[in-house]
Amino acid sequence: MTATTTAAPATGPVAGARAAATLSPSRPRPWTPYLFLAPFLLIFGTFVLVPAVSGLWMSLHNWDFFLPDRPFVGLQNYVDLFTPDALVAQQFWESMRATGLFVVLSVPLLMAIPLGLALLLNQRFRGRTFFRAVFFAPYVLGVSVIGLLWQYLLNGNTGLINGYLAQLGVTEAVPWLTATPWVWISLVGVTVWWTMGFNSVVYLAGLQNVDDALYDAAKVDGANRWQQFVHVTIPQLRPVILFVLTMTVLASANMFGQSYLLTAGNPSNETRTAIMFIAEVGLEQFRMGLAAAMSYLLALLLIAVSALNFLFLRQKES
Image 1: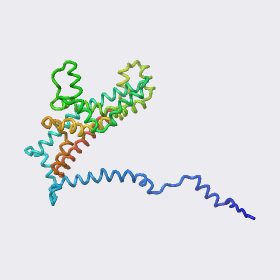
Image 2 (image 1 turned 180 degrees about the horizontal axis):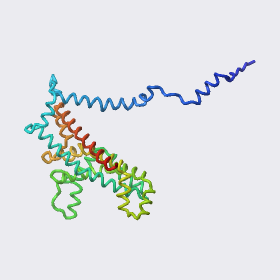
Image 3 (image 1 turned 120 degrees about the vertical axis):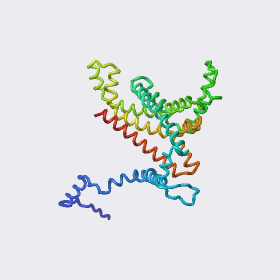
Image 4 (image 1 turned 30 degrees about the vertical axis):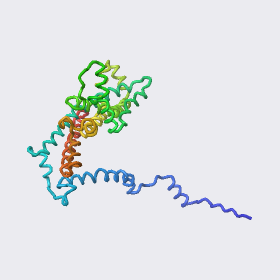
């Protein structure tokens, strides 16, 4: 004989309390937002905040790995970078000039070409997805792969491009990687080919959010394609343009791998960028305090440039 017992359903105030607990949303705990933020804060603190504070601390010391003591020198590392007769100051500002030249040459191309490409890829035609993938593909390659690939193509003696030019009748080999202005053409061309896919994808996402009704209204008003581009597309893309411009300036100002692998800073350190020189001072000469001071100057300059970008485009928007 087996006995089966079944719990009786709750009635009265107990049932009401259970129903209220089931139907009403639970109130979040005070620490719930911080729990969600904890993974990001942990990564941000470990890889950004702690290195930044450590770098500032190092820039105020004569920080050499081979010195038993690392004396506090205050702002002397910064003063040395502004002393005209100091060799390190001359080399640092030469590298900053190379960085600025690369930014000026590369950023306009990395803004205009991807925008034109995005406008083309936003049209309806057969194989559109394939071409989107083709133009984005170089961006997934590492800088070491890019360096080896273009070293093979641009080598002055055995490069593939000079070989093709010789077949076309160009008898004198072009020094793509050893003489100016060819070194800058090579570095800018390689960087544009490598990274324009990313900017194109960002532009493309922005174009797909533009309301077609705005283009229809412009057509009714008699606007041609250029006028639609100027008065509809550009204003609608202004937040995207601000993002792309800021990210492109920061990426170009931090250029290191292309010049290190393709030109090694040559000729006569003409293409030695600021990041490349900072790495030499810190990791080859072991003057980490001086290298940290250079890093902070570069960071402050980039913060100022980014702030100017925001102010300029915000004023245009208002």
